[in-house]
Image (cartoon, rainbow, N blue to C red):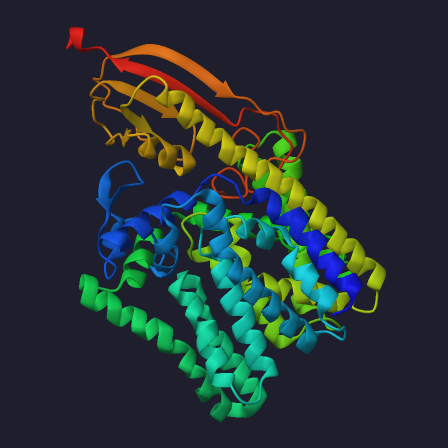
Length: 499
């Protein structure tokens, strides 16, 4: 590697990784750390731990929709500092970088280095490196497994198993099995396709584990749970949010433009406008929805463009959009398993234009950094809210995410939905709220806000109808511009005198 490339790598690590190593536990980090605690209690049955993540205490088996891979991985560091936990996740980034390089060498005409940087600096990848969620592991297994399989002559079976291992971290990783079968069939007919079926070994082992540990298959249970109460409107909302997320936080609109993608952008804008109107969004929220949906459809239209499309990459990218049909809610991080397809199509669209590729890397770095700063601010706000609430003593609380993690550490307990708080009660705005009993007599004690001091984009804005982490209801954009508070907290005391 040349000195200039080494300097670029060091600069990117210093910009996009090091400043965020102390990021507090945030969003779904909290439930994966709880699952790791479940693995500490019973390593074979981590989903047996009791958790209040949806308003009432229940085994994690019925509410946490991911396999146990990340719980087992986080087990040794679950009680360490945030810095140690984030450093523990970085080996996945090294594996992902190698896989991105292999994919770039195979699908583009470049050396692979700058194409690798383009994929690694996409916001959905960068923000995954700051999380304790399974997404970076899924991205790494998919990139290294598929990239290794496509470029290897001796160990294709091993790389197929590596790609299939993504299912140990998110069930979406199971899509690697039919995807590799398709690649194998195109590469060497049915014989080669049958070789790729070794990618099913991890999911077979996972199923056998579930049957032994729980007596049923967690994958099937979660699939039914995520789709039994979800209406048509929410399903389409998730898909539209997924498209907006790839346009706003996946493949940014620099490398995607050609005649066909301009038509795609027009179609996307019409979809975004109609969606914003039906969701009764404000003009500001509607602008973000329309723009990101237009960019998302434009990027995905490359999968159907004659001079750009490549069957494997097209299937990978379109598969990402279709995956949002089966999720309970949309989150940009779900693109981790699919972003290589969309990113490599964009690179193929402009692979002879180094200026555009360098510009895209620069824009990726800038937006990724700005979104990461805000996401860290949000995490710190939830942590600070928990610290300030704890100054009043201990009690029960409503809300989840990092707020729940740090309050639980301070000795608080999550309120059971419909219960009467025993004494002190704190209610934040983080995640879903479980309401106390309507008969509860509560005395107002205090209210405080964690104000927004950040001038940049916001990855979670309740009133701005945008969220990188959870969209598809009445919000669809992955980020927006907003100055609303990061968090608000209300403190109450139970009034036992009137009961």
